[in-house]
Amino acid sequence: MENKESNSIFDLRVMNRHIPVPLAGGAIGGIVLVLILAISWYSEGLAGSNQRVFLENKNGEPEIFIFGSWPAMEDPEFFKKIRGNFLKEKSDFVEANLSTMKLTYYKKGVLDREVEIIAKGKEGFLSETPAGLYGVESRSRNRLSGISKVYMPWSLNFHGNYFIHGLPYFPSGRPLNPRSFTGGCIQISDEDAKYLYDEVPTDTPVLVFEDDFAPDNFSYTFKIPLITGTHYLAADLKSNYVFLEKNSSDLVSPGAVTKLMTALVASEYMDLGEDLVVSESSMVPTIRPRLKPGMKISPLNLLYPLLMEQSNEAATMLSRFLGPVHFVDLMDKKAQAIGMTHTDFADATGLNSENKTTTHDLFKLAKHIYANKRFLLEIAAGEFKNAAYEAPSFADLEQLNGFTGNPDLIGAVSGNIGQDEKEISLTVFSFKNGAEERAIAIIISGSEDAAGDAARLFSWIKGNY
Image (cartoon, rainbow, N blue to C red; front, side):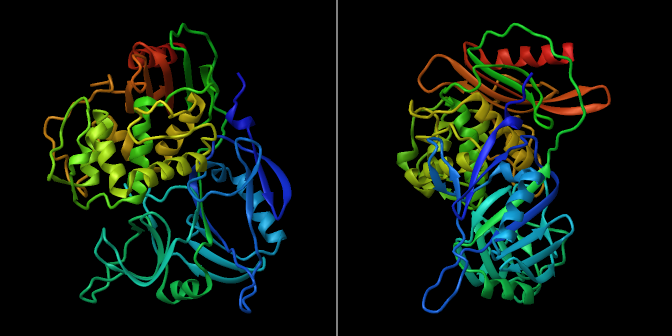
């Protein structure tokens, strides 16, 4: 069967040159690269390259590239094309290779400086840095981290809670003990951090590159089962092998699955440990009411009812902390940035009928979360346990995704499509084929029992492959 994702074309325009580039939909694994592409201009004697990147939007019109996670850059071949183009155009940029732990700075396409990366974010943790193109949003000579309560000298904030900075230290002046990883930031020496701080201006794009998933020679034998859903897609998250799909490019409502994007945005833009005060305006109809006005609760604790019980209260609370309009804008930018080009969000709960996506786009969401924020799937499955983070404050949480006790489950969100009686589910299973263990994503929409359909389809995959 044709692998649609690997045959997609992402259109790139750099300096008004048209470059169609194929996307290898498999992409994300052992190598992580960060590329900072400098954007500058002539102003009051300051010379720059005036480099801009344009992409075709869903209407075929050129748009300036949106900062955010971008799985297209998880393909090493695609990355090489982009990097090669910037070298050819003699652009300024910084490239940090988190595999070799080296960061290099280029001026007008010529190597200017190479430095050591001392520490990086650890894969699988809440603060793991997501892949994508970002922008330097703010700068601080000595920023106090609201999460770890340490000072980060010469900080460049490039996305949500993520920074490039020097060696951190406590308010007392005591340096933080050397570590092999950070809370998601890129840590370099104070001297090197100051150099970047002085050289890299605000609005400079920052590219995070990952290569966790790559096409391989793993093969499946295709057989056809009976599926009752109107729209579905079942595929291997590593190889992108499609077991079965139907109407996967048609627009549907994401419904309850919207809350996965809500959780993703919250995890990247909010301090998950900071207490929020529940407002009266957050009291909205939901399946399992949990919140009360005046209650103090952290965003991390809100993720549990959000993903396990599809809580509209939790979604509303998270979105209103950053501002509902701004939050939805971040959801849309995140969707565009991870390749969900046919997705638009109208609210954080999924109840609004103007929320639109495709099952193919939701597969990209599953792929991105599995690679970068897997703890969200573990929370949805009721299996997230980490001594470094607080336990849920709610003792009687229910797993309403329909997969209680399923040993093959990695994570799932299942529920209604807005106010419709039909259901939708996004599920990731662990699938063993001989000695191989694979992650399988199944997205089903327009079903009277989406979770049941997903479970039956997964059973069919196990029995036939």
